[in-house]
Image 1 (cartoon, rainbow, N blue to C red):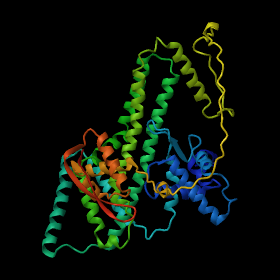
Image 2 (cartoon, rainbow, N blue to C red):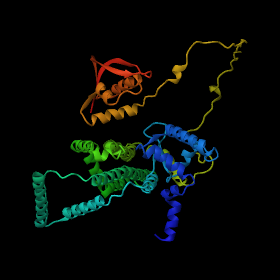
Image 3 (cartoon, helix red, strand yellow):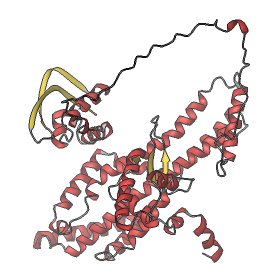
Image 4 (cartoon, one colour):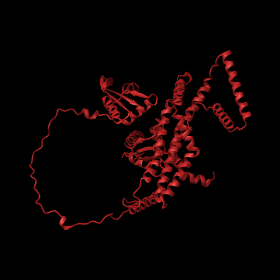
Length: 479
């Protein structure tokens, strides 16, 4: 931690560059409101631009137009520029609309700023007990003497027997409200940090994918040698401490018994009077679904590496199209050379035509007399219409991805769910359009069952507040 190291860290580390940026209050407050507070992993580009434009409008109304003169699009482009930007801009799957997500450095900066806020109280006992439990667990797992291990287990058994006798004689002692609140805050902080760590795990997988693509593009080795190196690196990542820890975490989270136990504990926790008095953040009550969403995104990122290797293995025409592959490799190498210093102009590279251009005189068409169009002059008059256009402004947008997420959430708790049961848990917010969207999802899902003989009557509330019954075929979604 000498002077030169800190000087370089201030100039290069994205977390410190964010904290020292001129518009740091604007950047951090907006990103906290959009990503951290509602625990969103990613936001579509058009939606994020609209939200930033509204936020800038509010600030202009208070601070004046000259405070933040640039547009929302310009700010988003600046925040996502470069590898160490404050936002990550990417294109998911094959969609042409970009999405934005926080970089690990930005999440770290926001987490550090949150730690500066004054807390209701700082729990020390629970942290000390956690240290003791971790030390005991490490020592117990590394003990190789059977006699020592048996003696420790017998001491625990004796302590449990004494506690049982104490409860039988005197009942359960009253709980200490301070200790309950202290442990609740510790669990809440741990859950937030766990969600933030997922961005770093995802970033590591993306770095592995980028390194693999660069190695494939620049390597001159034969395919067998290159694949040996890639798969060796993949095994190193999978067998590393982080890889083994993530696999163990995912297996633990996907266990139905663990999920039921977690739901039962959270339901019991939020029913305590000591917790209800705190008016807690509901984030912890939804931690299972938040972790599932974060873990699913990490898996999608890791699958990009597998897809890249599959495409490389499927390249059967390498020798036949050697010239084309060499041209593509040269373009990729040139692009990576210019990655950090892009040229100012739009056109910075060119290539020869792949085939000769032949123009035969006999291929030209004969001369034809063009037809002269006849244009009649008419006097246009403004007309009147009794058509109401209010319906054009009452259109609603139904997000099928949100509906699919609700179906997956319900199927995590039970093997199958009907459309009526699903709407009882998640009432229709967009009226009949949302019912039609569910029908479309059922049509696309091979595991969904649509009965043409059995019908359900589903109550739907319209925009005017009236409730109507909609009769639809019975739809059952299956896990």
